[in-house]
Length: 331
Image 1 (spheres, rainbow, N blue to C red):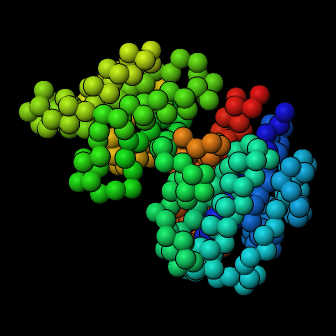
Image 2 (spheres, one colour):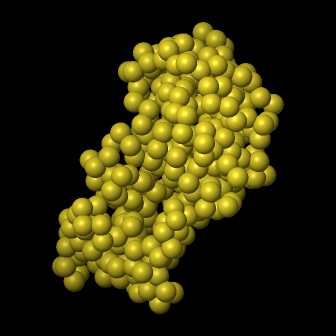
């Protein structure tokens, strides 16, 4: 089986359409998956022209019948945007349309009519201007799927991280570092790495405080919340170690390859090392959903929109990773 990848177009005023088009000039992708764009045909045709890609564009009525022919970019056309939408501008119409692409993709994913959702970036300001008040893709997907138990995972060439907390202030993140949540994220890390084909994941848990609290001298969260969660996970049979001092755990995971994934406590603790090591090729994965979702690990890049110069490597990696995870899940 070749999995069907539902690629949501993202904010049309940004680089999403262009990086999708560039990524779909890769013939190898069509050997392992059936990629179908969920978006707007005229916007994709415009992106083909801007990037000078040697592709034709075709509208399909259902994602299950698309993505078969390399050289033909199939679009489930929602036709919800004007052809003269300006580039590089916050526009509520683009935000509303971006939400509708995701909503449509979730419908098909829940019905198992697509096997993975791959998302191009949306603009949070435009999303809110369009009437949808969410911090980002992760929260939209969780809302549409009715899921409260989820986490953000980032995957790069040499490092994978998964977050206990994400889009909250650092002060609030410290308040949310609780044993129950940490254990659940360890469990999500274990299940997600297995979807990547690793049967016995090696999991590291980063400490929150310097030197993982130094026995309580630099904060008690590591002692009171992280250590008990790690002990619980170990008792459940998972191969997990921690808390490991934040200033050494990424060296051990990325350079010495001692671990398959690092559980991090807050947004920047995971994002900074991942982006230093693989800014152009990082992939964002939402775990805990009833379907597979991968995404580029960057924003709409308004400064490059409409120029045909945007780097598509993160989209390419997201497509391949989505196909790989779907193959493990669905066989």
